[in-house]
Image: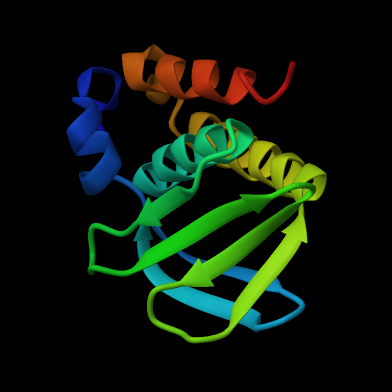
Length: 136
């Protein structure tokens, strides 16, 4: 953590912060994802949300394995498909973007509060800029 302010984007994405995640849709219930590299997930989520906003499929990949979450825009609905399961879920596009914004903002705030040196890292600024795209 002593070099957090100067750590490369790659190191921050894969070598610093790991957590367990859950996400859900009404259709498939709670999905538990253990040991996720959280900053990599935030990057992937923001890139995927950008694609969805542009009308394209957004994918979230995991460095820990070959699994993918496909986010498929369909009008005002985002369909959620997981590469490891047959059932699909969906959510309102507006809710999707609200949750993405809140989740990513909360992750960045949590890390910055506990590790102030993170605020000096250019990767933090990059993520804040990406997040700002959804806050306009």
